[in-house]
Image (cartoon, rainbow over all chains, first blue to last red; front, side, top):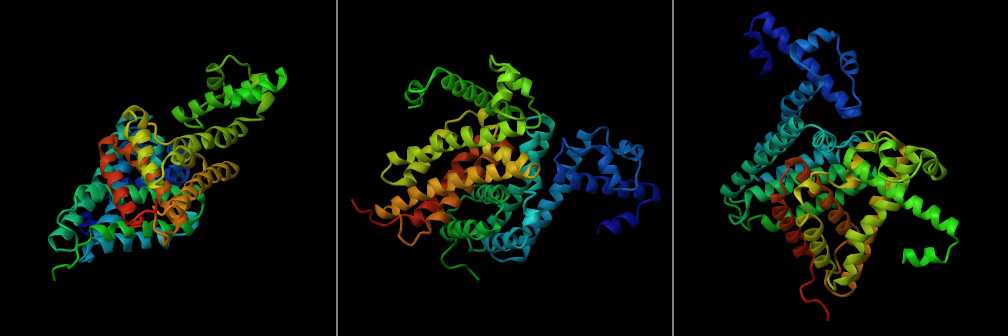
Length: 214
Length: 214
């Protein structure tokens, strides 16, 4: 989809978008590995073939780049990993469990040691920059609202009890994801994932409708 | 208890213990407010009436002080806030909910914005110092095992189903605490606490025994 839309644009616009995406991906990667404060613009540029001029043409500061990473990279990642795939599941609760197994259960301990990229930035940046906090909070809301809409669908299709509070269920699901990442990172033990996800399955059992409509 | 044991010691030992505790409390406070990396030893000392010499007499480096904060301040805080008070409850699940309401539900948004001191250090330090990671992981295990022993008691007293896996329940409870702190910090909205704790109550409902022994 991206490549189609790029093809319709003039080469100048296409280059700018390509450069922007290259910088954003490198920045995401470095922030995820080292944290925001411990990452320099030079480290980010070293992962690309671009100059500082190219970076400053699009981002006025490291903070400005940080906000864009949240809005453009992290939000897309949340959609790709946790929200959009649920559409393939008639019962969204099965989709949530499937994505958890795929994205956490099957991830390497090495990757899980890095934690959740969104949660890491929340921990590091929420209190040091108010604007960062607002971008991070918006990304969390985007995640909760995305899950909420699938829970609503599950209620309409009769997989989830009509009495369940869709927003509260979505908040509980996102809280669990952040809790899983935090505890697995802290304990260096993805072995506990099974017990953690079993707890969520028990909770899902209590909000699942007894006989889904077909 | 501390003052009794201090009184039996000679003045020199007493002074060393008092100094140690003063430094540890100031260090905890500064790490919690600013993060570990962003805190200087001067900032910590400024909160006390002590000299750098007094600090280095007991701690060989800022990292060494960090490990001691985890082992001596954080672990005690976990015991005081989340484990020991459960003894007052016949049903430990009621105790867990009570402490959540007390320590999170009744906390100010301002305090909750700082997050969980343990989770903050896990996020910041787990990947930058292996020894820090081991101390943090030990503190998390101390928390999980403390809760686990109360869950075991709840099973013996007939408040919790004998079929419940005490360790898994304890892991799920600690995961939830970290998830609550993370999400409330990220969203700057303690209003969601009610929905989050309702999810845990639903889970507790599924492991509660139907008719507790008296």
